[in-house]
View 1 (cartoon, rainbow, N blue to C red):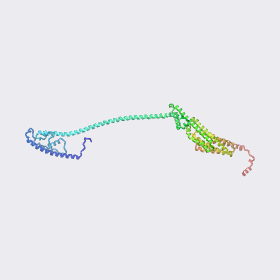
View 2 (view 1 turned 135 degrees about the vertical axis):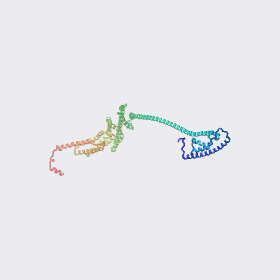
View 3 (view 1 turned 180 degrees about the vertical axis):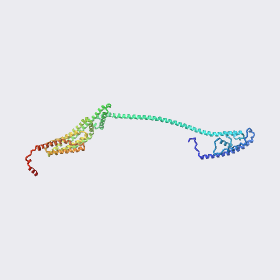
View 4 (view 1 turned 60 degrees about the vertical axis):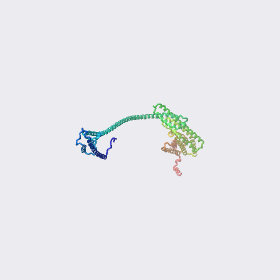
Length: 516
């Protein structure tokens, strides 16, 4: 609701207004009657006093009086519960009231209507008053309409302003939206470019990292002393990185200076393997020298010898195995290039261990020989010697595999055969000179039993030492001697058999056999 709109009135309020209007009309009628009576009295007195002053005015007809007019108007006008604002109602109120119009002067308002001219003046004044009253209603309504029209104009202007503002906002929004989309596209393009450039930078950095590792490797390898270099925590990771760099350079030979870097990386790797070999050789020889000195100054105690010969070397293997595994790995990948280097490792091992064991094994075999010379028994001698060499070779196998778990089996068997030569030299002459066929059969049976024990190990664990390989030369000697003796017996006792007189003395020969 606008500020100029009036709230609707209730039915009760309208009834109260009608009652008030009726009371006011009754009061006005009473006042008009009183005033008319007073006017008639005063006019009659004035007429008697000034009867000849207004000769030009014509008297009203006797039938026209204010009372009669009032009576006629009251009879002609139906009763109304509310006051009317029409000109006729205004005229009736003026006539009923008997009051002169308000636009007349005080003297004219008090002068009674005594002539036609006076009546015309009075009626003109009344008509003017009625017209003014009727125009006031329309003017009031016009003022209200003007107010409403002005408000509507203001509202329309406000709507136009709002529409213009909204249009401007819409245009600005479209402008901002279009610029935002353009900015978004630009930003997305920049992000895409950034991703592409980032990926290119990452790829370049990853590839350049291989080239930068050359300086790192050279810095590590240029440190003084092979022990300090090999024991450096960065040494083994550096070797792993060298392998990656070599593989990268080989697969990207079209890169600038790739061939040059390939040669330098290969030199660094060769330098690393050489340092490992030198460190290994020095450590093995130093430990061997220490063990040799302690064995010379210690009593012949079996436990002490086992500790010096094997436990100390097992402790050293924990340090050397990661280094040797680097050489083994490259030998398995490229045997032609690293075969000679790994052969030097094996040669050092065989040389050092041979110096420690050959004299000890020779002494022990001699002791076994002396023991069995007192009671000549080839089977006991062979069994004791084979069991001793089995224990020695098994210990040497386990120790060697602690250093070289993946390679060197052929070189190790050659070394173990050299250790078993003392047993071969002891058993071979006795086997070749053995004349008893049953003894040779027992030796062959024992050898086959030992080989059968290794066959069970082959099925259980392929990495275990098989002593049967070292028994084959002895078994071959036994079989050769057994075949030779069997042939000789068949030749002498069967093919060239000449019976004697005692052999043909039957039945006395059978009787003597039964008696025995």
